[in-house]
Image (cartoon, rainbow, N blue to C red; front, side):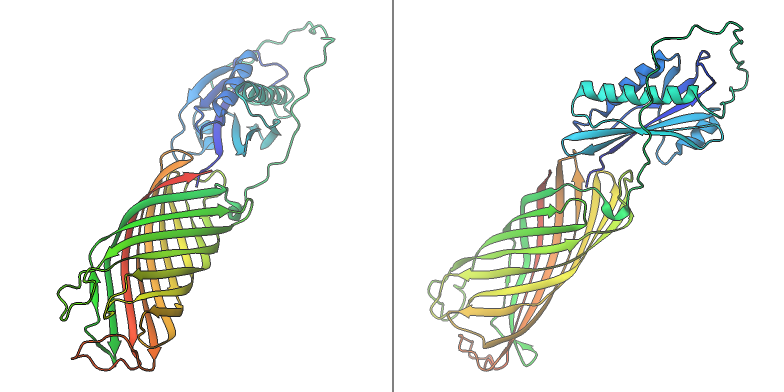
Length: 429
């Protein structure tokens, strides 16, 4: 969810002949990026070296969506330089591109990976040295801005310096980022609390609901999830856990069961495998975009309730395979909107101490969404909601307690639903 690429744009205008005696204008965009990248030190080292070469260094605030090349042309600049810092685990790599004259991309280089402030400054200085040397040796001279004059020619050749000029940084080809290889944190964790609301349970026979039905009020929901994103791929694995305590009031039932206020809990635990397909943006250097994550997994879900005599509320459990897709909309660099839809197939449903019948085919649906706001590169806040529905068909005759005016429990079905809403803290590593 973070973007490690930290662009720094420098614009040059002025002569690019054998010497840089006439101050060339350089406009520098203030570096911004995640903590620990020291990209601002790379910028400082580059600016210091460029200024030391006799260049006029000034600050530029590049507006969102503005093209650096177009801006350079509009301001009369005929050469510009682009610096970029890319985080790579514990180290960072700085690289440079330079454009001038009719040559198009005239210079590109990358510095050795660095890990500290001093190394970052040295990396920026090394890249700037390569740019200065490239400007001195440009095959296509850069024209002066309007009103400027070239430096007068000196008929006396300068004395030869016995010290060889420093070699420019090695030229490397820039690899275009692949959209499907969007950089993501390796580990993401979400933990929080909320409510399990609008819970409902009903037993249906012949298309008609029986009196073995109830609605639940808002319950406390504790929920956690962990995601592992396989590096350099779109593959990932997710584990989830949810827990809600519940207490029933059966004192109004005649005759009342014992106990009349059984307690219990809902439990859900499982895992999902997904693969992120980046459809637009979201790759290195892009702050917005859309990705689709096809997914499949399995959950274990249960309701454990204190046994009553007679048993009106049954304990139950099921294995629930699911499959579907999740859409991830990155609105800005720090905000993601999610939409999740899954088909659910409850299998192996069991009930105790009695049963509604012999469990058969189950089918269900889960629809949810959320918003994740990242306050820093590793800490965020999430709000998520999901509606879950499932229906399980039973065959044969059930032996559970029923009310006198209900039909016999023959080939019945059980439907359940719930709305889950939770707020969670987000961590990324």
